[in-house]
Amino acid sequence: MMPSLEAPTGGAYLGPRVRVRGAVFGYGTDSPIVDDWSAEFHPGTVTAITGPSGCGKSTRLYLLGLMVKLTAGAVEIDGQRVDHLSDAARSRIRAWRFGFVFQDAALDPTRSVLDNIIEASLYRNQSRREAAQRARELMDRFDIAIPPDRRPGQISGGQAQRIALCRALLGEPDILVADEATGNLDPRSAATVLEAFREHAVTGGCAIVVTHDPTVAGWADRRISLDPLHEGVSA
Amino acid sequence: MDQQGTRTLVIQSTGDSPLLATQLVDTIATIPLVETVVGFGPVRDVTAAALPDGTRVGARLAYGVIGNVQATPRTPNEATVQLAWLSMQASRTLGLPPGAGTIRIIDGPEYTVAGVVTPPDYLQSFEPLVVIPTPADPHGKASLSTIVILAKSPEDVAFLGKTVAPLLSELPDENVSLSSSERLATLRQAIGGELTKQARVIVLAVLAISTAISLVIVWGFVLGRRKDLGRRRALGATRATIIALVVGQVALTAALASTMGALFCTATLSMLNTQIPRPSYVMAVVVGLTATAALAASVPATYAANRDPLHELRVP
Ligand SMILES: Nc1ncnc2c1ncn2[C@@H]1O[C@H](COP(=O)(O)OP(=O)(O)O)[C@@H](O)[C@H]1O
Ligand SMILES: [Mg+2]
Image 1 (cartoon, rainbow over the protein chains, first blue to last red):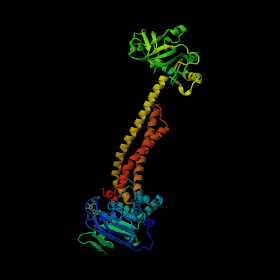
Image 2: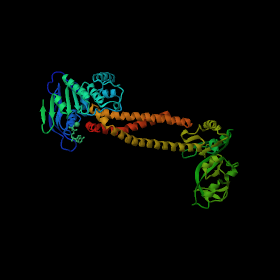
Image 3: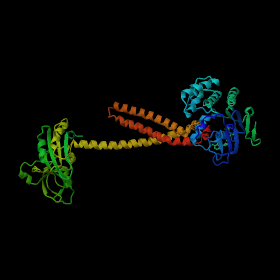
Image 4: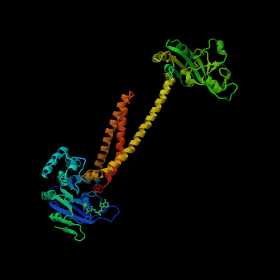
C-alpha cells in the first residue's frame, strides 16, 4: 500500500480523482446491477449520480468507496488502481480519503453526538483531543447548537444529518460522497448540506452526490444519469 | 468420625518385606503419651481349616494390645501354641462359631481359635480381623509392616509423632511412613480427591456452559449491531478493528462480571466462615471466564468483520 493513497497528492496529477473502468458487480447470483460501468469524478467538481429508485445508485457509491469486490473492471484513485488492494488497505483509503454522508445519517444512537463525529478518527489513529477540537469547530460552522454530549435520539433529523456531515468532513477528505443526503431534510438543512458540498468542490475537493431529486441534480456541475431512457453524462 | 480416629498414629512400611521390629512396639509402649500400641505383620490369607475352599479372610501376625486381647505372648511356651483371635465378623465370614474352631493359612500352618477379639474403633478398618499373636522378633529381624499407636488425647498426636519419628531414623525413608490418624487422613484424602475431581468437572462444565452462553449472547449482540458494524466498516474500520472491538467489549463485560461474581462469592464464603479459595484460584477463574468469553466472541466477531459493509448498512 503506497502512502500517497492515504493523503491527497500534491500538484503533479491532473487526471480524474476517481475513475471507474468497465465495472461489473451484482448481488449473489442475480444478473449484475452494475454492468460495464465507466465514469470519472474530478477535483473541484460536484458530480450528481441520478436515476430512478432501484437502478443501482447506492450500489455504485459502495463500489466507489471500495466496499465491494468487483466481478470485472477497476476503480482508480489518482490514476492508481485500488479496488484489488487488501481489505485493510481499502479500509484505510476509506478512512483517510473518503467522507460519507448516508441517507439516514447512520449515527450510533448509543453514543454522544461528539463521539459520533469523531468516530472515524479512531480508524485514522488520530488523537481524540484534536478530533474533538475540530468537531466543535465543525459544529459551530454548521450551526449545530446542541450540547455535544446529547445522544442522537434527542435531536432532529436535520441536526442528525448535519452531524453526519461533520463526521464526513472531520478527516478533511478529498472525496466527499453523499447518498440521498438531503432526501428527508427540511429546506434549510438540505441547503446547509449542499452548500458544504459546493464549498468542498470550490476548495479543490471531489464531491459526489447520489440523488433522485432533479433540483439537486440540476444544481450539480455534472450529472451521470442512470435512467435507461436518457442514460449518459451531462454538464 | 470416631473420637479414637483422631488419636491414632500409624507407622507403615511398604515394600516386599516387613521392616518394623517388635522391639519398636515395646519402645513405643513405654512412651507415657501412648495409651496403647499394636503392630501387625503383612496380610496372609486364611480359611477355616475344615473348609480349604471356603471364604478367605486376611489374617495378620500381631504384637501388642488389641482391645481386649494382649497379643504379646508372655512366655515362649505360649508362643509355640499356635493360637488366633477372630472378630465376630471374621468368624462369621469364615463360617466358624464365635471364638472357636480352627483356621489355616493357605499352604501353611493351622491355628486354634482362642477367643473373640473385639476391634476397638480405631481398628475398625482392619475388619474382618484375624490376629495371630507373634513372639518378639529375634535380633536383626523384623516381622511387622504396620504399627498403630493410640495416643491418650488428640492433642498429644502431633507431639507423639515428633517423639516417634526419631525411632524410625534407622529405617529407609522411602519405605516407611508415619501418618497421624490414618483413617482420618485416608478419608480426608478421599474427600479431597473427590472434591478436586468434582471441582475440576465443575470448572470445566462452567467454562463449557459459559462458552456456549457467550456464543449465543455474542451472536445476538453482533446481529443486533450489524448496522453499527457496517457503518464502522464504511467509515474505514478494518476487519481487525471490528474483531478487536467486538472481542474487546465482550471481554471487558466478562471481566467485570466475573470479577464481581468472584468478589461476591468470596464475600459470601467468608461470611459463612467457610474456607475461601486461594486468590490465585479466584484469579484463574476470572481470567478463564474472560478468556472463554473472548474466545466465544471471536467467532461471531470474525463473521461480522467479514460481511460486506453495504449488506449491513442496508439493515433498516
Ligand atoms: N444486499 C443486496 N442483495 C441483493 N440485492 C440487493 C442488495 N442491495 C441492493 N440490492 C438490489 O440492487 C438493486 C439496486 O439497489 P440500490 O443500489 O440500492 O439502488 P438505488 O440506490 O438506486 O435505489 C435493487 O434492485 C436492490 O433490490
Ligand atoms: Mg439508494
